[in-house]
Length: 547
Image (cartoon, rainbow, N blue to C red; front, top):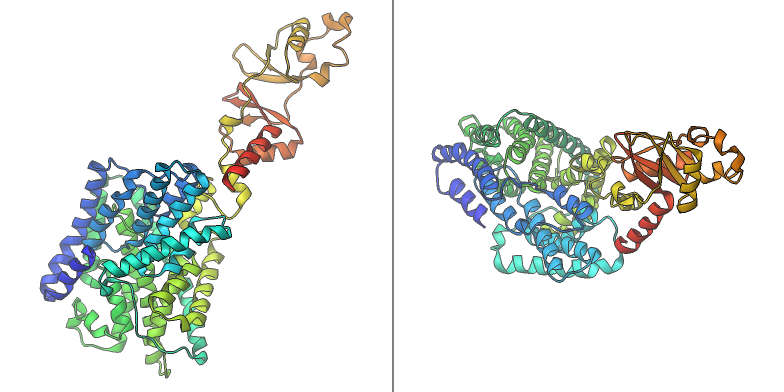
């Protein structure tokens, strides 16, 4: 509501000449203020977005910091309320997840229930933001929960219903993401939707590439965080002055496109001073669409707080209107303009977030356009497949997945991520100096309980290992003790495990060497042993606890 009031004030109460001042100042102010809040109130803790929640699920047993129950609200309200070109939905989902996680911690629930309540909080947040309970559930299933069973539906359904009902009761209907006008679905229009699906998929890829490029630029920029925020804010403000639809979430613009009010949208920009022409509108919309990817990325990575939900919907609607207007100008009759705007939103969202089911149900519920399910499915699936063609996993999550810091759909790998090399090491080992006598070795075997003895030098570096099986033929022949040495009976391990190796690499080493025990070293110094049976036992325990 706060965001909506600010935008209404700027776009409705003032003439364009006065609005320019707001467009020039507010976005810059929003990003800088958000950065200051993060630095001096939240002490630099600005991990944000859906990747942060997935990280907590995989690496922190679904325990989200209590600060996130309110920090995301403050930061995103400042950023988006003052014109940041991002969405409120990701902060809403993070806030709901934090509330669910901390509610579970209060009652000391286990990992499974804690994760389910975390997902229920995010579900309620998405359901309330869009008044779309089914979309909220799909969001939890597609993005947050990698393993779903039937009983998980019950708490998520309750959370989605509560979130949707409360938003209807408290919020003004006009503030909700809703579209009432649309054309009836006509199967003869399927070629339009096929083409739109391709455009949405290609644009989604463009959006992702731009986002990654901007993130890289800001990450490697040798400036302080305040300086980065000022640079980002200045660029965003300039964009908003030239193209006011980039200001804020952009839902008002999308509603205007869906209802055919393109003249009123152009009237609040410098383009109003040019002669109104349909081809000129195409240029305007094309530039808005291309720059939206930059505006959103600059807002988020320059120091603001927000998500890609709203920008993806905005861009999708603009792509749909652009295509409809282009087809009309080419003389194609009966173009379903409103439907293309609505369905385009689902298309780009599906390709950007890798969540086709969430996109389909979100738009279907928000527009009460269940008769549009067929075109929604066509466009969303085509866009999703094009995005998957370029990258099998969402680029936002790709690095975290490669580093093994979030769960994926490979459930056995998810459990391996929970295993840590240091916890698997058996440090109750036997060691012997490489220059010791064979008599000392036999005495160590007599008093010990291990089948392996590590051979080390004076610097505690591993030289080899002595297996009980290797010395069994001579250990009872005392007449040969004087002619044997440690070096003559020790063997070199087939491979060494480094303390920094991931468990997935360790499993691969066991498979390649067909062994059951391997020594662990840190900078060459012997640390202990890891056994394959120990890994399997720990894996079985996790399977029971986390399944």
